[in-house]
Image 1: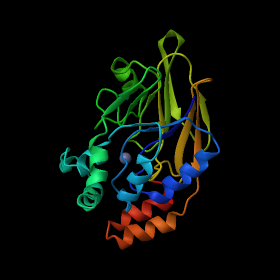
Image 2 (image 1 turned 45 degrees about the vertical axis):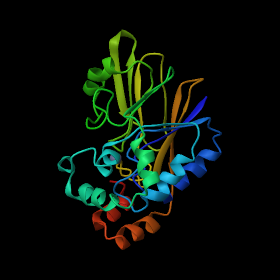
Image 3 (image 1 turned 30 degrees about the vertical axis):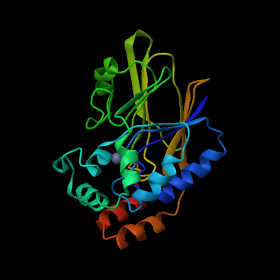
Length: 244
Ligand code: ZN
């Protein structure tokens, strides 16, 4: 089975469309979505419509989704994120809001786990270090555990002898995960922060357990224009061309 892995789309329809187009050639059998479908970007409704049409879909909520639904305190967020969440609230149709609301905080199948932040704290904690990965090992059973939240393509893996490795996945690099627990982050579709402005997503092949990154160019300027026209903070447009 080949799974498309997408995270942190953040209401960026141009980036999402480019990724779905690139994934067409990969003949995937299903879609994993690690949360933060909305927030920051100008097209929450269009993005939710595209996401809802994906099937089969294994999707969770992220902290921005929770906040846009009034399920998380806005005090948690920085000023830019907060402004975008406040903008998003009230722009979601009843149907789109109901779809987001219906998503769980974690998905567990026999073959993989899906959360936004970390398995022990899906809404808030970032999985950035080997230490954090080790601390989270008791909080998920099925591996890989797909995560998002940091907007950075990353892998963490337990090796024989209880050694742990972890690193960034640069460009279109790949990680062949072993039989022991691993956590994989596909980076961000709609707001990459690894200084590569191309949209990021990944494919996980369950037959050889290979996770490979796709980096997809998209019309960044079109998204930036919409962000400015919507009256969202200009920094949210600027950062897209820098990938930060
Ligand atoms: Zn995010």
